[in-house]
Length: 317
Length: 323
Image (cartoon, rainbow over all chains, first blue to last red):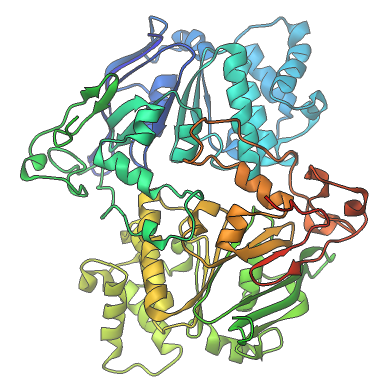
């Protein structure tokens, strides 16, 4: 296993009130090199926190993350750089992740200089090369971010992430901010880059359609926990956890048309406050198959069929 | 259906900026009949929001209707007085916006905000309070008494959107205009709101104009669809026609660029190269021509006009043709 995320917990304390938010409550997942792990869940489920922990931007409260047998170190500055060069993060919004006053070529060159991967005289050539890898013409390097379209900007973000020759790319909602007609282009680019450079991806999204399209394995998160894990076909075609089933039923799908009945199968209620989690299974307050015991016992991930894990004792294999 | 007079008839609508005139919307024509739900799909900059805002005279400062007309029940809204439009707004035609946090008054209790809606059109009486209570209850707000005394920030995003819907439905409008009301919500909450709206529309036999960028959202919600691109309607028709037999290369491209659960093989997504043009830079040509795989010389020298009927219309010299 190349990526081993082991029993991660992350708590945030609101200083003013002393309230503790449990963003991640025991996440364990492994990933093979070259594979793509899709992480899906609604806002507040902890998917972005997990991205920040795996990339090393945040230190977990408990637990460890290792990439290629190397543990992601604590906040000592000199330990960061080698890890950051191997693990890169691409954010949702290229409008805010690129410096609007920096020429795009300079944005990419900066990454090259930080990681000391090429000599000074080769930087310019490498910037051109990176731009063409993501399908942009090198003359764009003298432009500023506001002069580009959303799709082009996201390509620049990807080029900058690739500058350090990473092995693991964490993509946090990389196409959600883009217009529908350019999403497909960026998705295709990501798939091409994966096979060209043998990259491993963690693809985070609330959009099951995109998750389904790119992932080998999928983890469904709810309130800081993985509730179901399996390969993409298991999760999409044969979901077992009631939450996964509800998510899939709610996914807007234009392959079913003119059938208002499809709108009726909705999940009741809303996601509870992470500062005040329900006891037992956090999902039981919205669950259609909940029984009395669900408010007491904390479900663990159990293997229902080979490599298909479900955290619900009421689901039978 | 076409023999009946439509409830809303938008004809040859044009919208431009006032200074340094730039065309934003061109020659937009469509109609909505009583009880009918029409969806408008388009990407950012396609003009879908401006079209909806122009109906109620809510265009932002510096942008104005420069051509065509909007007729509601025989009344021309583009020439109506502000007083006449105010009478319609919120009662006969009401609107739900994408972001309830900016549409609701953050420093006024919900109950009072809803009472204001009644007050702006009729006299408040002993019954008004109960009407507000009923409206909130109908959209699924739990603990209505407490909700009336709460401020918008005390609600979740989904609940705020329910409050907005309650407000929009309070005076039983004939037409509800909804501008991406579920875009900011999580999918399961989006589903709840869509189901609520579909149910209320059915119950009240209300007409609806639903603006969205997400084709999946409207697939099971509306009767007819309008597809906009760079300030013009490129295709319109029944939901079934648009989804199963798209004629404009843009509509076809958009549909095949979306992953669907029907595709078991996860084949490569078809993408549309390039980016949309700015409407004011298009000139005498089809706006989609630079990105179109079927482009011909005339596409670059003439503007294609929308031709067809309510079932199916397309603005293209070389449509996709039969399946």
